[in-house]
Length: 267
Image 1 (cartoon, rainbow, N blue to C red):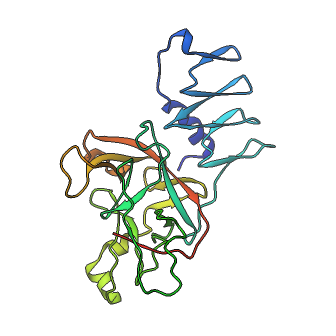
Image 2: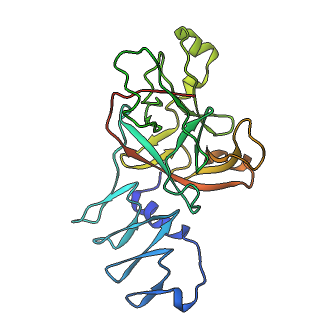
Image 3: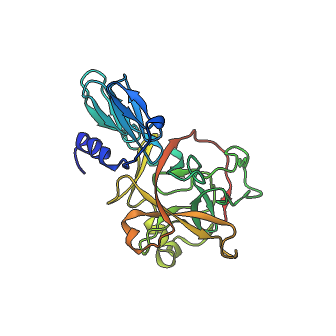
């Protein structure tokens, strides 16, 4: 991985070139800028907005950086990578991109896939007859852990999320109650959980080989007709070349949540 400062400065090149009329521009010192594309700090420094996430300004160094990946030392201007979330820390994922259909919305689990958008359903069921289970605690949200568990599922052998190695799609396992050997011999996805991803505390979810971006691809729900009930399914970007034109780059941000007693299964 490139040094933090180089990574932060490289992000400046990702801002799109936009031609604007004078009426749309605002002053920032001697410069002018589009408020939809940049943020002005101290009336002199412009930092771009990338995938609807504005870069912050580190005053001592004068550079811009992604606060979802770095922190700025106010005394020295040094950029430090955010700490990685411990494997047992629960978090929810929020998608950020240019499209309002999924921007700022949490990642949901339904039908074996992780997806975003208005039609991305949360398919949960409350396990009955299990002592100490309160299905109302998490409010039906999709909650993850860095080690690959779906944290809100208190199920025999658990429930797990993973990146499928064949096409990079983000999926999760069924709820099963098999012998341990069945997971190893017949359920290879159990072995893929927690691999190839890193979640920073209140920062980006990172996939190996693609430190910033995932891809959101518009897909029809299982059993639905073309053009109906479509949601944005998520893929790791290393497999971008195999995907079609109905895909857009998104960033996923992990927000830490409190560990609770609530539990339910995802279907």
